[in-house]
Image 1 (tube, rainbow over the protein chains, first blue to last red):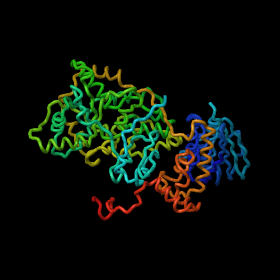
Image 2: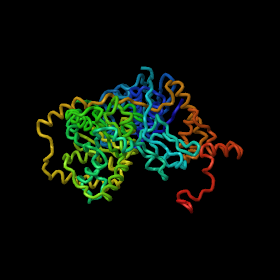
Image 3: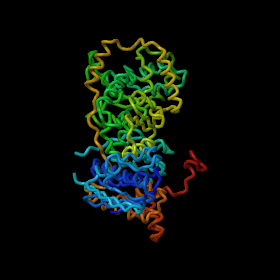
Image 4: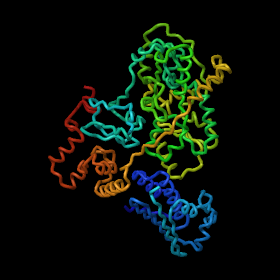
Length: 138
Length: 454
């Protein structure tokens, strides 16, 4: 099953829509709440990243009986140094974004922590694609 | 073994007109219309009472014990919440109400908030000892059930302490046993402001069996007391009242618990407000709240569906009583020694077992659930998305789910009947199945029609 959610850059009020919808689906599918929690956290962080940094993006969620795969693709500034971006607390968020309580430099590390697999492909001035995978079996 | 859940609600099919009001307001989508009557889905209902409130013809019945049931016991005890005392007009004194309850046959009367001071301290200790954040109060049984059904991941946030009516019942019963009464002689009757408390007593969560023997609804008792006050001379103040402090009097009002708890606390009332907040909490969007007080009814228990008086008046009376109570010296409270003994006893009784989640899912098996989910999404392509309810399900999404679960047919949708060119007779039969034989007949006695009341 494939679910798609558009994510609009700069709209912090709507960040969390995709993760909330995916959560509702997973609950009905009888996925373990602890696994749902990890997926929701990872996807929410991914949404906030797109909202905070990119112009627009798309979350494509594929669910089968074993796993969930989430592809977050955006057009935006890209990440010049992916390794650096993965460091805890490293941030390029603007002061305005930080004032809203986002951009603490926890996003990507938190996504990594809450997924079973994560891959980042990024081209500066073009955009970023993050692939997340979580398995349902305990 | 699968446990069945007891619900205090029933639909009186002779009164139900099969309108969609209840179905539309149900926060867990537990109602369908079949044969022109509302039907409840037991595994989804959380006993919040929104259906009861919304019903324009009062077709929902709430079971209660008949007052005569108290005579089965030699020592019938009335456990009365403070909101009950606040149902009456200002010229009726609390003492008169006590006296009237005695006249109705109860040998003892106690206000259930007596144990609030004890509970308050234990809740604060609980907060110090437990790392889960936010901790969620178990005071309101409807919100506890909402979490069990809709937010399974939050069930380990509950404060596993019994509510005041349970604790007071334990204490009162223990005192009566100490006085020499036999266990079988004592009948504990709780006077309830809502259906959720009835369900919590008849089918408790977090404990094996409730200590309460029977339940009487506030509105029924209110009527009986009012009748006595109007028709019998010499109902004066009784003398056995225990003094309640301000914290106890306001405990069942909104913010009654939250104001005593530490750090960031929130008090949320109204089942839809609670649902909206829990959704955000479960989404991990909220992470700085330490304590949540959740109440299903607007203005908490003052707004209980069985209350006889307006919720704002009830709230006002309780607040006035609380401010008077602060000025009064407490001449009937327990002495130091009695208090320590009572606390020690309650401590042995106060804990609830774990409260399990019982989520509504499409299927136990993930693969099958996934297939059903795909079917639902496919069906949604065809349904109009108007959420009119004419199919007998609360909205298009619910109909799609009912179809996937084989509880309904896609042709229940009147728009699908139109687009798929079902003939008039066939469509008529479908409508009749959902809405009953007579609901489309001319009826001038219905509510709002020209001979209403005939």
